[in-house]
Amino acid sequence: MKITIINGSPKARGSASELIIKAFQSKLGPNAECTVCHAALWAGPKVVETATMSDAIVLVFPLYVDSIPSHLLRLLDTQGGALSAAAPGAKVYAVVNNGFYEGRQNAVALEILRNFCARYGLTWGQGLGVGAGGVITAVPMDSWPLRPLDKALDDFADAVAKGAIGEDVFITSNLPRFVYQLSAHSEWRKLAKKHGLTTKQLYQRPAK
Ligand SMILES: Cc1cc2nc3c(=O)[nH]c(=O)nc-3n(C[C@H](O)[C@H](O)[C@H](O)COP(=O)(O)O)c2cc1C
View 1 (cartoon, rainbow, N blue to C red):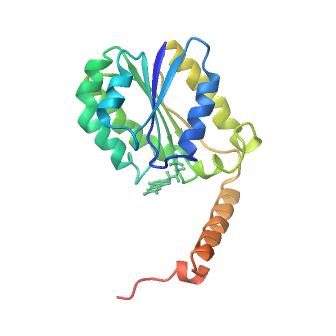
View 2 (cartoon, helix red, strand yellow; view 1 turned 45 degrees about the vertical axis):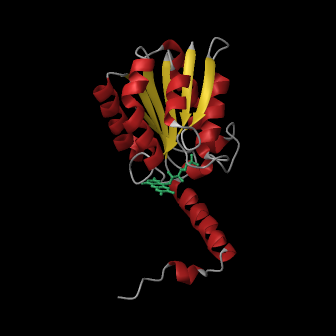
């Protein structure tokens, strides 16, 4: 089974998307032949060439402004027709992770991808929306806070391997919402300090 995975994070390395891809790949059986394309680093035609005759195309990317990061959107927009001609039987799957706590925030981005598939005659498989994306780069994938993601990726990999079509699934971390929020605030304060800003300055409004 040929699977083309498209990493849609603009980060060259160390992204939550990259960790999700690694975990997803580890859950596929030995019959899966996977290639990972980095949308921010690869030219569109090279992605299409790699995806030729794929059985599945799996997009893994962060949510940007309730939607798809612009470089990935451009890739889909400019290469959609070529992608569909190169891999006419492929099913399209997606894992979208976001910074807010709730995985359901990713519903609109998944809807956009369903419309993309309808426009270019590709078959939509299934989407997975993952909330609290900040946890993914902070703790190991097999630890308690990420257990829902680990379990969801088991089912997702199984669906991709079987070529199954399913309802979108939305999950978040086992961490309570308030703990996630507190640690996010603490990280932002540390980042601000590193860049010479005080916490008070973070809340400053621009002069009218
Ligand atoms: C420009 C920009 C826009 C973002 N928009 C959203 C958003 O609308 N909703 C949200 O929950 N997170 C948003 N985020 C947070 C990212 O989705 C989040 O940090 C994600 O875990 C990054 O994944 P990555 O490491 O795979 O790139 C945004 C981040 C950036 C930089």
